Image 1 (cartoon, rainbow, N blue to C red):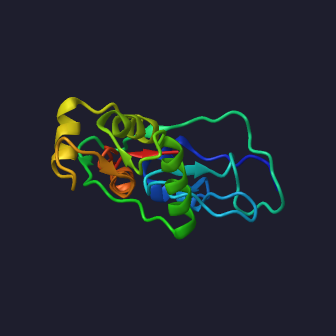
Image 2 (cartoon, rainbow, N blue to C red; image 1 turned 60 degrees about the horizontal axis):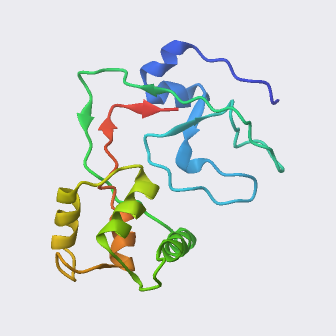
Image 3 (cartoon, helix red, strand yellow; image 1 turned 30 degrees about the horizontal axis):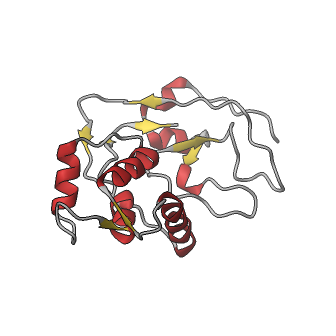
Length: 171
């Protein structure tokens, strides 16, 4: 049925408890009917009360979303190493198209300000001058040059700007 699933708050004690009770599933599996999933990070879950993968046919998504960010054990939490997103060809094509839209000069490369804008738009992170110095110092064009679009694409999918914690979960 399509009735909401009840689950005890104690299930928030572990990701496994949420998944075993059928309360949530990995967001990377979330997809609309006959559509491909998006490359969400592994720590992100979707409640089956929001969208159940067993539903068939077209569905309207609910207009209200609630996000839970929880840390079952502060002692067990630790900073996770950045992890690059694994994109399929269709996702790479959409990312590249988005970069083409951001390339207002049509140069196929990005200035410091344009790289800062792209990172802010994609990751909601404001880069400092020092961050930009580090990025451009390692770039093929050097510190004063511009980053080729391919380098910006790699930067955006590198996971570098996503601070994640092992043991922290989101539903």
